[in-house]
Structures are given as C-alpha cells and as structure tokens.
Length: 415
Image 1 (tube, rainbow, N blue to C red):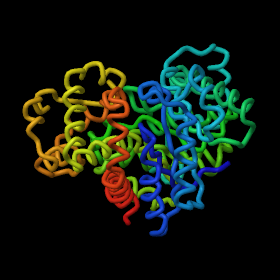
Image 2: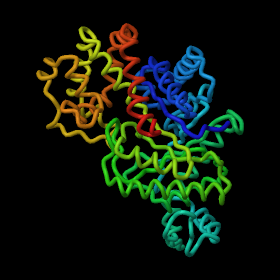
Image 3: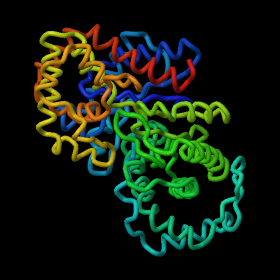
Image 4: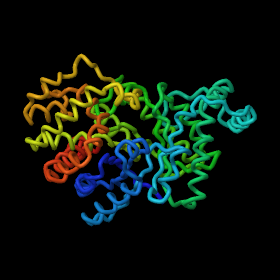
C-alpha cells in the first residue's frame, strides 16, 4: 500500500462533511493534481465527541461512493500509541504513530552503543547533496541523538510490529509523529531518526517532525519564515538522502501537522516541493469544524444562536478546553470579545471574526483558537448541533469546500 505524492488530512469532528471535503479534493485533482484524501481522527477526538473509529471509515466510503471518486483514499488512526491503537485496527489503513512522549526517555546503553557503532560510516564531515555545509557528525552528537530519540523510535517499532501482526505487511501506511513537543528537531536529528527507523524495520511513508516556530491550531504560522524555509528545504534533502542510503520507502515525505492555515509558509513549502519534485502530507483537521460553525453563523436564526452559544460556553470553560492543546494554542484572553458583545453580533460579524482571512478587520485569531478547541461544547449539544448541520448542509458544506480549496489548495499548489 503506497501513499500518493500529495495527500491531505481532512479531519472531521462530527462526520458530516466528508462529501464537501472530497469535493474540494476532486476540484484540485481536476486542475491537474493527484491528491489523496486521508480522513483522520484521533482517539482523543473520538472520546470527546463519543464516536468510534468505524464511523470515520463509513464517512469516507460513503463520500467516495457518492461522488464516484476513483483515486486513492485512506482512513488515518491519528496520533495513536500502544494503549490506544487496538480500536482502530479493523477500519484504518493509515496509522500515525505518535511517539513524542518517548522523546528523551532512557534506552539501554547497549542499544545506544549499537546505534553509534552502526553510524560509523557517517561520522566526520558528512555531505548531503543540496545542503551547502557538510554536517559535522561526532560521537558526542550521536550519543545525544541516541539518548533523545532512540526510545521514541523503539516505541514506533513496537506499534508497527503490532500492526503487522494484526493487518499484515504492506496493508497500511505508516506515519511517525514527533511534532507535539517543545523543542524542534534539526535536519541532522531527522537524518538519524530516519536511520533508527530503518534499522528497526519501520517503513515510514511520512514523518512529522517538530519544526522551528509555533504551529498553533487553525491560525497562521508564528515564527521566522526564513528559518523555517531553510529547515524545511534541508529536511526534504535529508529525506531524499535517507531514502537512498538507508533503504526507506521511496514515497517517504514530510507531514505537516497542524498545517492548516499556515498561510505565510505555504509559498515556502510550494517552492521547495516544486524545486525538488517532492511530495507532502498536510493535516487540516480542525478547520472543517471551524467552517461548520461559520456555516451555522451564516445561516442565521437558530443556527446563529447555537454558534453564539458555543462561544459563550467555551469562554466560560476556557481553561478546561485549552488544557489538552496547551502546546499548540496561544490565546490572549484580553483580546476575546465579551459575552454581551457576541450576543449582539450579526451573522456577518460572527462569520468574519471566525473565518481566517488575514487582514480582514473583523478577524480575531484568539476567538478562532478558542472555537477550535471548543468542539466539546458542540458535542454536548448533541442533536441540537448535528440536526442543524443537516438542516443547513448546503451552506455549511459550501464553507467547508471553499476553505479547503480556496484557502489551502490554491495557496499550497499555486492553482
């Protein structure tokens, strides 16, 4: 099973927007691309909205059947580990192995030494084609990398082995995720992480490192764009070298987690993947939920009132809702509108405040991030919320499709 050159993680909290998401992908493919949609949903999201992994497979299959989609598509068990993987085995064919919590955990010294010994051919001045300065690979550097990442890659191998036992070799896509941590991984870190995975027989087709800068949920990149550009390009070159040197799958590519809405770095990524003719996996999970709320606001009446209720309740439970996402959100409480202010908003004002259009006078990234983590509030509304999604499906679906195609695909692929 091989992933296409380009793939898009289209998460859907409430499993109502599969067709709208797929319409955007089909539209992009009709413009000359070959993008595989990957419906992804994490164990945490399933728990919050009381859904089951099988629901994602049903949504994906139904959307593909409804639109007659003939391309590759996948269902991703997003951010799973050994304690959460089992319920996803039957219906997922893409597994994001989240091993970030194992970074820095100790490994047996014999394993550390074995890794260092295996890296002897790469010690000294190591030239990576395309990277101007050779990498200075010392024993001390390798020891540091081993102590930091060996346990994480061992955990990835353990999960992968379990999946092979359950699903068989070649019957699923493997992604390795190390992004939800404080410190970024450098290109040289990435190189030897990939060697560890190769040594352990983990055929990763995508890898999600932690990049420099902030990848906050649903809002633009925050950081030094020039530094990101250098890092991203070097990571692409490192992956190319690792494929050829370590025998990793030719499809291996970078995965950008929380990649939705990182508009300021989309041109950088577009330039690099075009320059080297490389692929990319982009996860846009939470933006579909945000577009649902925007669509309800646009619909007006009872739907607008529910959109307001979601914000008002989320504001009162801000600490609770933000806690699971502490590493990937930054909300300035002073910039959040008051309850009374939001109660008086029109459909247009609410939608413009939430919709991510940089430079729009109403857009508020703090408001947007709070709604982003507030889907638990909508879940607790139950059918009050989902019935409105069905009643206003045309309006909501149009928002979802426009967001993925116009604000993401167009920017990322220069359509």
